[in-house]
Amino acid sequence: GDTRIRLHQEVLLGHGGKQLLDALAIYPDVFHMNEGHSAFLALERVRRLIHKYDISFDEARHFSAAGNIFTTHTPVPAGIDRFPPEMVQRYFRHYHPLLKLDLEGLLALGREDVFNKNELFSMAVLAVRTSDWANAVSKLHGNVSRSMWQNIWPRVPQDEVPIQHITNGVHARSWLSTDLIYLLDRYLGPRWQANLVDHQVWQAVNEVPDEELWRVHVRRRQRLIVWARHRLCQQLEARGTSAKQAREIADAMDPEALTIGFARRFATYKRGNLMLRDPQRLLKMLTDTQRPIQFLIAGKAHPADSGGKDFIRQLVHFARESDAAHKLVFIENYDIDVARNLVQGCDVWMNTPRRGMEASGTSGMKAALNGVLNCSILDGWWDEAYESDLGWAIGRGENYANLDLADDIESHSLHDLLEKQIVPLFYDRDDHGIPRGWIRKMKASITRLAPVFNTNRMVQEYLEKLYLPALRRARILGKNNLHRSIERAHFVDRLRAAWDHLSIDDVQADTGTEQGVQDDLDVVVTVTLGDLNPDDIRVQIYVGLVDNDGRIAQGRSFDLAHKAVLGDGRHRFIGHIRPQTSGHHGFAVRIVPGGQMVDSTQ
Ligand SMILES: *Cc1c(COP(=O)(O)O)cnc(C)c1O
Image (cartoon, rainbow, N blue to C red):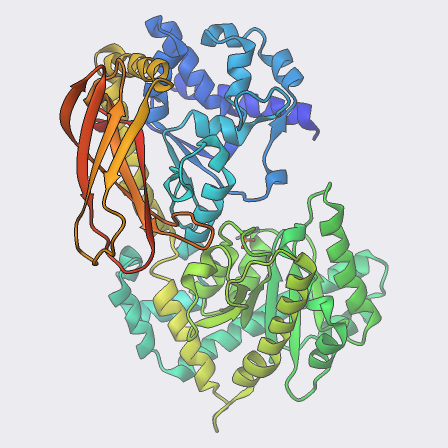
């Protein structure tokens, strides 16, 4: 739909969702907003609090935000819903007074720069500004998100932007092939599914005889090819190919060939056409009769994404025009059923996103769990999962400014991997036809990746890092009719009013001489706090190695101690810096909000 319908949907989801829960008499303490689509929920929560307690927006928001969690999923700006201010005005003109906000106040909640009146109203920004808790979905995506949303926290160092990460996982039982489940039942013991995160339990996969694991895997591939032939016939016949001809093409698929799966949304950043960048080289591999390979490709493009649709066209065209029609098969209507067949029956799972654009990439986890080996750009989950003995990395985690150059280098690297490592390892068989090296990698992939990239680990992490801390904070701020939430709003007002009058007047430290690692460097700082008390704020040192641009990269911070009241609102703070490593260090002094009001609910 268009933006207007999108807004309708999100009102229905956010406002309607909250009303539905209330109608069902379900009153959660913690709300988890998965992506920005549901962010109107946060407004609706505040509206109800204002109505119930007769308080201001800010007085209600601290409590509400304490129990809101926002998970960001997309590093692609086009994937984030944004609405023109006029549209928000039109739909919310009767609503913002209920929030005790003027229109400007409402619009500012959806802007990265609150003062920029031309900015579109972003649902993700709204979610960030109304949630105390935010997370990305892989370690690398955490870095990407902190950089992407840094504008919301101006002047805060990037690694302190309060977005943590919890890497996605997949539901093992739903994605493991039945054949493999039977095998695991036998070797891991009947209770393995109750101990999914236990590395020790998964170690037993190493005791499965190679022959047995291979037999199971080959059977899965054969079943996949039978299924793919059937789908392909249907597709071809639907396009007017005769039944006989369709059968011939489909039958040419090889149940014994090295089978590479590639299934994902055809967003341009996923570069579904990367392998076509050197068509001759690809064709040579596809037409090799000694060591045959074949690709099974699936995926849909967003209707509005002409680039993504074009990738699909290129692939289909390439397959049709070359001698490789049956070697590069496009399965239509990618859905969970298609995904399940592919991630259980392929030999290799390929992923070629532009680095930094794949937030997580869960299909690779589904494959890994099944002993299907990943070959991917070091992006999303693979950046933290990859080790050389359990799969392949395309490139070494480089980021390129020149995208065309990146495509060249990475397609070259992909072809190299296929020709020099993947194909040879797959066809390196012993006297019994068993690829020992390949199976070693399969076992490494299952034993080391399955216990980590599953939903049991993921949900446990959400519980420990987000749900329980959010619950604790919401309970504290919610007690006695939101007493602490209201207090906190007033405290923030007081800080805000005083902030422009703060100054760091003097910093004394003997930086002229060389400093030994683990030696203390004394620092004495004089600040003017005006009307604020020393325990309303913290005076901090931010220290770390200085990079080539003269910036402190990945610094750490610590508080200085209040030493003396100097009069006229001036105070002395002291502390010492103790470098942990050698090298050129720098430090900065800063003042941040502090005090009991902040600390007690951290
Ligand atoms: C797992 C899955 C996805 C997500 O996979 P990515 O690796 O993130 O692209 C998308 N669609 C379907 C049908 C899936 O099963």
